[in-house]
Length: 312
Image (cartoon, one colour):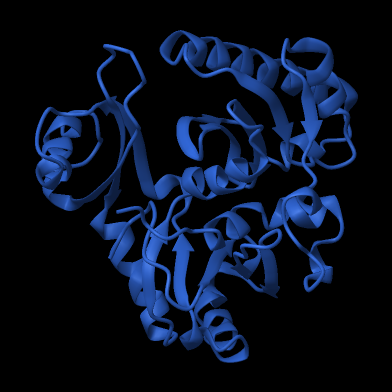
């Protein structure tokens, strides 16, 4: 099973996300003559210890056996690391990357599942090729897989939030330029930068969506200051590391009723826009996603449903 990345498409993807307050699912059809169409977006509210029952109901209601199914690991279930790609044949790359990250992960290599995503070599640059390595504890993966197996949902792949968010970002990219996307959920903030549909930067921000719903104006603006500083540092570092990529703008997933978008517009050198998925997805069959807050809640599940056919 692929841990993340791109995989062969047969009958389309059904992405299933386990959230703090239930289970959600999305399926998307990619079309050559229009925007990708969201075929379904469904939520099954429930407590964490009721996930098995919710999954079984979801699998039956949505006929999950008609799809290739993928799910998302929680942010604490893996480590994502950018490293210099070893100079070995591609068939040996995953093993070599495992040894390269052995001392960078906080658990033994033999207890991990490793996967990778190679960044394209920079044109005309002598810079070493970079790669993302993801290491997940087997003790996290195995119960996750078993939960789906017990619910009679066969998983083809397991995704991570950074790659799912990259899939959304790739749809928003201006031609020839990179795009930064910032979203918040119960696990915290996630900043990604994509360029030519590849993930180039992923940074976690230790501020949750619930914190950004705080009605206290002073506490909220302290959080805005922290977010702004983290964005400035991350984007400056990105520009130094990948000088051949020009980031066109920052797109912010909707965050409550606050004015974070206005605040970032006033304090960043990049243009800042609020995310509107109607620009890049056909939502006509998904009335659940008409409101910006609903789109934000489904963001990474929709991203996971956008998995593409692997390149040769």
